[in-house]
Length: 164
Image (cartoon, rainbow, N blue to C red; front, side, top):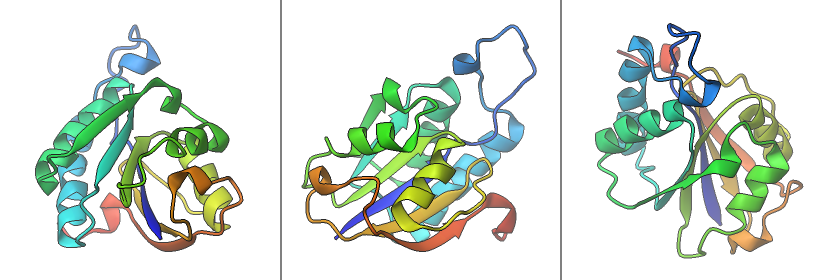
């Protein structure tokens, strides 16, 4: 059994319209919510073994704040393929994860994350910024993952639903 944690990046800023989408930073709310979700990972005993992160600035910033808050000291892999990826692209990246990583945190974007959740669990959930989904996958090796893997959605947490 493998665990996949799917996190949408925290809220980004649109303050500077001249910035390329890939380079948008986090806004004030994003900087507040990312560490909150990191503390949630620690409280739920879900600190990952490995983190895969989009190369977008807002995703990298989310990772930095979240991982510091949960005490993560493992490997952080930045994967350019995860920037606005569709579910099959994400699955392809996940299939390359070493089997020693039982719990993987994926940090990326919508609409791909919502679509990935449907593909892996059959459940559609709204994934606002900084939302986190916990999925259990009935596989022993990441290379066995495909977009028809019958995973189980364990929980979804959204920052606005958490106690302050």
